[in-house]
Image 1: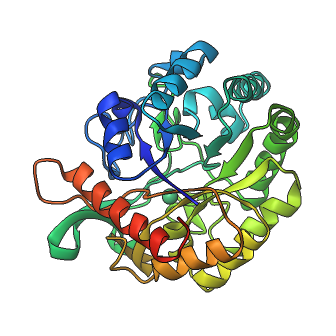
Image 2: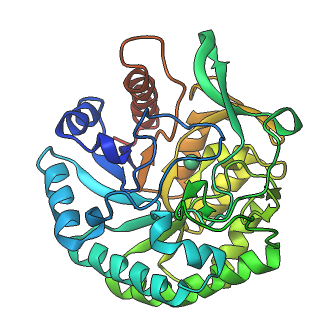
Length: 354
Ligand SMILES: [Mn+2]
């Protein structure tokens, strides 16, 4: 089992690679889609969502992916995965729009480039509404800034405007109107079309596609169905298109927020099948429709027990902290991550893993 750190696009710097290494990480999970540039936190709602899609798309070109990997390797780290596709690259795959065929070819090209460069995992989140509806507040220990989902007490679920998907704007000049309703049948069909097109390419390239569950795991959000909002729906994904490239971006936080299943059974079920590409190691207090994201050691999940189950089932992939509460100091994000990484490092050592 290896310790990793996820870095947003604007944080892919030598200083942050060194920070990760100093905290005991050996792996980086890189976000190439340019969200959170104004501050590394999970933002709330608003008309712009996470902002404009499509900024800096040149980073997806093979030579730039190679340069990124080399810069990370130069600091003694591996580039373990890239997390999330920019919505500009595949909005019509999600929306079943007119550019779907062309965009599927784009995704295939990116997967082939990952294979050539040696990036083993592409994490993705097949979602229309995306990560939406949270509020920020002093929800973690000591009043640390964190996020919560508050259900009916949170922001009103407005329909998704045209030109937006996955909580980002891909067409600021879209005509007025909304995306409308998307049913579970439609969404699963779109996922199946996507997997049918890209899994053979991923298998050939030696790249794993790893699906993040829904965050927040509500059955619907803004009028659109959600895909994996209960733990058992991960099994549906695996059985729909069995493949060594069809894997999970296993978010313990999101899975613990779901109303069904025992989190330890869920971890056991999917690690036993060797279905996990990498782990988001996050803790939470509560379940939908109401939960708070908290520090890794103060939530509902016994995270040490989670690591023991993963280890017992032979999981040897990467764990990253996911989002954490921010700490009151001059470097709130880094302090939160350093706290999580230190806890995780100790947990791995306590389990006798290294
Ligand atoms: Mn996650």
